[in-house]
Length: 174
Image (cartoon, rainbow, N blue to C red; front, side, top):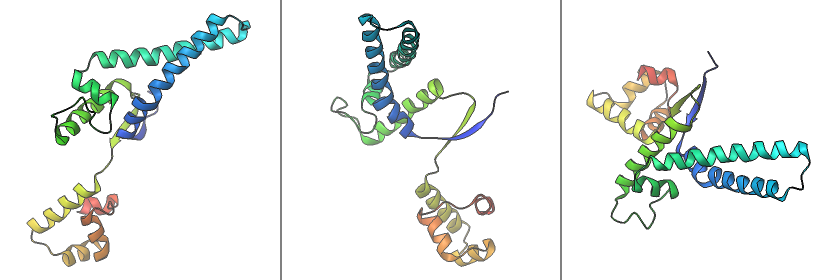
């Protein structure tokens, strides 16, 4: 069995892939193809350029097959992954976010290596809100929780306000 790595999975990787990796692959393919058609290359460089062209072609081909599996709205999100484009008239921001996360999920399944365990980033604001709601539901004061955990009131406030994420040991006790 191969090594298992823990790596953060984020929308940034998806944005980078859409905005940089695919255009660069298309450019590399064009340049390698032009160099091979020019024919003024020695034998050593030909195999290197062919290999580069084939790698770029695979990336572009995978991109096109991925697009073929998506709906028209999802394709628009891939072409403009960070904000709704003008072609997505009538879609609310919440709908855009939901569709973008679904496209991101499909992308992760298709393109991220299988030997890496990907984790999602913790939303500090959401975690803090849930911690505070749970504390208040159970009727505990902030001082009681701080004494029980052995942390300062400022630390608890930072957790509940979403400024910090508690350590795993504090999180487990919470």
